[in-house]
Length: 566
Image (cartoon, rainbow, N blue to C red; front, top):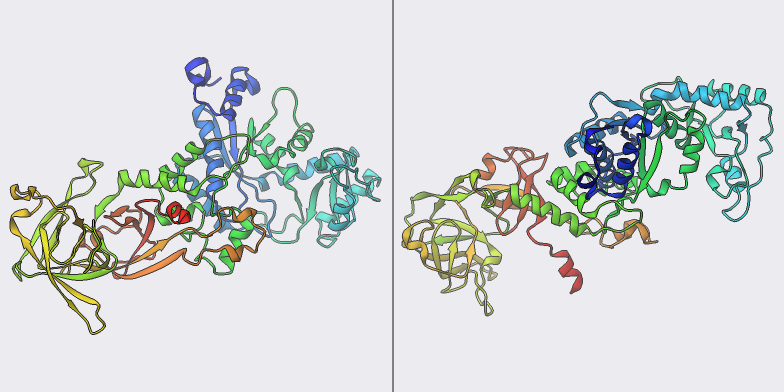
C-alpha cells in the first residue's frame, strides 16, 4: 500500500469522492495495494478543456496516492485517426504538467489478444456473426420499456460463426455487411446488454498496423480488456458511461479472477457556458473555416487556450474550483476567465501599448530631448525589477482618453485638465488641432518638470493617470481581440443550427497599435504581458520581428456579465 494512505484522519481531508473510493480501496489492500489509472484519448481530434478535467483526475489521483497513470490511445477507428492528433495529445498533457513516463500504450497493442478473446467467445457460443444492417439491428433492439427481438442469425453454430469471423478479417466481406455480436440477453433492462456489437468491418489502413486488420473492436469490448491487459486498477471516466459499467464488468469477467480486476468509476464531465465540447462540431468549425484551426484561440481546445495565452496553472486551478461530483452541471466560463486573470496578474510583465492612438505634443518639452523613465515590471512580484521606457516631446495616448466636452467626473484628458502620464510627468491640455472633418489630429499640452514620477516634486496629486508611448520610439503591432465563440449561454442545449449561434464579434483585429520598445524586444512565444489599462496579451505564433502580432488572452475585468444585464 502506498505510504501516503497508510493512516486515516488528515490524509483523508479534502478528498473528492473519487479519491475517497481510491483511498478506501488502497486501505483495504485491493489489487495488492496497487494503484494504476489511465487516460485513454481517441486520436481523432485535439483535446479540449473537458479532457483537461479528465487528465487532472487520472494523473492527479495517481500522483496523490503514489500510483501510476498510463497514456493509452484508443485507436480502434482508423477512419478518423491521425498521427497529428497523437502528437498534439502528447504535447497538451505535458503542457498541463503531467507525464506518463514509459507507459504509452495503444488499444492497437492489444488487437491480437482481443481477437483471440473474440474467437474464444465464439467457440464458447457467447458471440455470433450477424448479417443484418445497422438499421435493422437498431430496430430489433427494442426500447427501454420493451424487450428486443432476437436476430435471425443468433443461433448459428460456433463453427459457422468462427468461419465467418475469420473471413471477415480476411477482407472477404464489404464494410457494413456483417458484425460480430455478443450473445447476452435481448430482454435485458440494460439496453447495452442486448447483444452488443463487438467487432465491425473497416477496410481503412490503420496509422500503426497498416492493413493487417479488416475487423476492429468496438469501445465497449476493447476498453475494459485493455485496462485489464495493462493492470489498470481504477478506470475513471465520465457519467455517460454509467450505463456501460455492467457491460464493462461483463467482458472483464471473461479474463479476471479474484486476485485482480479493474474498477470503473464515473464523475461529471466539464460543460462550459458559451461553448460546445462536441468533437464533431469542433471538427466542423475547423473544416468549414469558421475558425483558423484546432488551435484557434477561440476554441475550447487546450492548444487554442495555450495559443491565446491561458496558463496551465490557471486551467488546473479552474478545474480545482469546480471540483468533481456525480451530477452534471453547466459551469460559467466567467469562472475560467477569473482563474486566468488571477494567474496572469501574478506573472505578467506590465507594459505600455496604445490601441487607438492620437498624438500629443508637449509644447514646452525640449524637441530633441529623450529621457528614460523607470517602469515596474510587476507590482505583484518586486523581484522582477524594472525596465526603462523612453519619454519624448511627442507621445501617443488612447483617443478615448481625450474628450473636448467631457461630462462631470471625467478624469482623463480634456481642455485645461491635468493628468499624469504613468511613470512620467503631469501634463495639462492647452489646445487641439482638427482635420477638415472635425476629427482631432493632435493634442497640445504643457508639462510640469517638477512632477516626474519618483522625484521629490512628484507628490502633486491629479485624479487621472494615462498610459502612453513615445512617438519617436513606438513600434507598430497588430492585436487580435478574442471573445466567446457563441453568443448563446448553452449552445449544446439549443435546437437551432449551431451556425446561427456563433458570435460575429468573436474576433476583432486591431492594426496599427503602438507599443513601447521593451515589448518588441521581448516578444518571444509564451511571454505574458499586461498592456496597462487594457488587458493581458501574449505574442501569437504568427508574430515575427518584422510583424508583431499579439493575442488578447483576457480583458482586465469581466465586462460580459455587465453587458448581458443591460
